[in-house]
Length: 74
Image 1: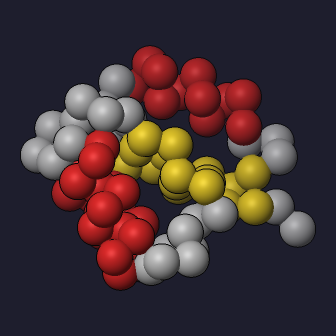
Image 2 (image 1 turned 180 degrees about the vertical axis):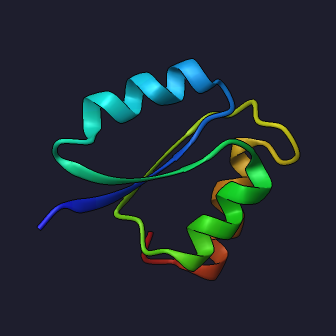
């Protein structure tokens, strides 16, 4: 069974590269800003979150703090 990865990155080219590298071995969910990253991180059970620090709307630290608060097992 594939593990679930949440990729939070605002650069579409970088997001595409990471997706292409990981898609064969992982289920990939994506967000392009901090708010969407929080929503997807809270709603979905990700085994791993790959996230950019410099994001629009909320930075990476705010995203991970919100997700961990709502879902400590991540």
